[in-house]
Image 1 (cartoon, rainbow, N blue to C red):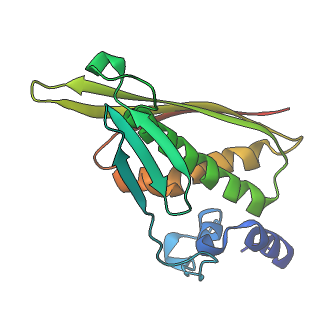
Image 2 (image 1 turned 45 degrees about the vertical axis):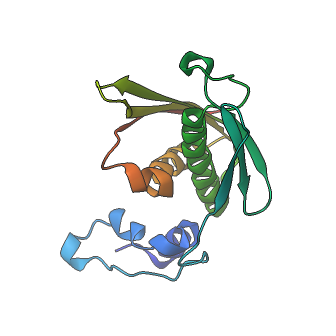
Length: 185
């Protein structure tokens, strides 16, 4: 059993919804571990909305619920003008953005000193005789943390991969590969 001071420190550093992670660090057998769900500080349910309007040519404009706009277009490779972002690139960008935000959520909760954080993504698509299909996504990157924060940085990367809601949603139909380096700055 952890001494009370250590237990309090672990509870303080854990995300609200995952106090069960304390148990993963415990030396007790699974049968003796406490499993509890703590209410999240975030909404139970949320909806994301966007509208797409054709531009009269080979692309269009996406408008999100907060009136932000993204211009997309068909790449020149597929007889488009290539004057906007390719929807496949938007897909990769959405995954990277979700991973980024998930990482930063844990970084703030752990109060980890973060010096820099970069991610790069690549989706591979193949033509199977009927059409294209994305067959995998690879994510690489680098996390640079402050002195004595290496273990916390590695933990944030692990939690990012585990809790990004976009990758959780599609992980059973699309393989993800990660190559993210964590180092002290």
